[in-house]
Amino acid sequence: MQHFELKGQVRQVGNKAVIKAFRKQGLVPCNLYGGGMDNVLFTVDAKELKGLTHTPKSYIIDLVLDGKEKFTAVLHELQFHPVNDECLHVDFLAVSEKKPVSISVPIVITGHAVGVQKGGKFFQTARNLKISGLMKNLPDDVTVDITDLDLDKKIKAGDVKLDGISVLTPKDSVICGVKTTRNTAVQAETE
Image 1 (spheres, rainbow, N blue to C red):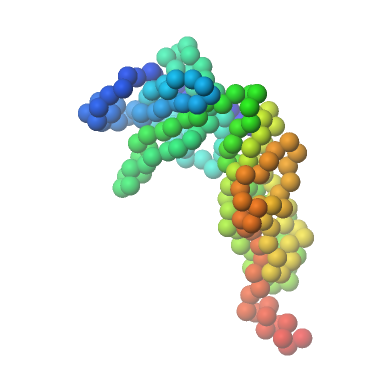
Image 2: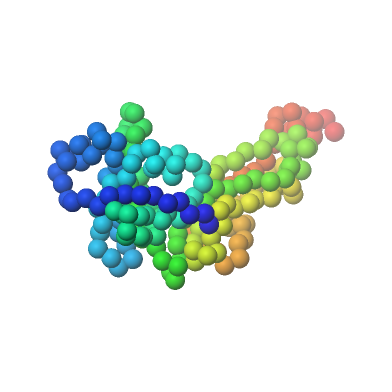
């Protein structure tokens, strides 16, 4: 899995006025917790954070606080402003190489479905898959081959098999499929 380095400055607990002042300076208040450590409050530059939040990719984050302290984490929760879509707050979860990490990774569709060649319509309902595994085994994305997908067939999360990785998305969750269209149904009736 790819790593993303993010630099931040440790901060103290503050009231709403202090948090608003950070946001006016272009900083986003953040919180790091988990892994048996005390909570660490810090701020990051909003422009740097966009490289992490405005991409379909998933990353293991290398946090560098005050230029010296280093932590390994994953995004846990993001809060956005409802109107201007600016990031208001980020929660990071500390992870280690010895314990399994839960993370959502993007799904990459490959191939050309047999059902589409017969006149069906392809649909994709899931863009990410939640997986768990050791950090060294985590893939950058999950590739799903749809070549054998026929009319009225679906690929579910339970159909995805990865070595050394467990899929946490519910097994019945539909990733993609091929629907029969009206034209295909009319052709089948006339034949």
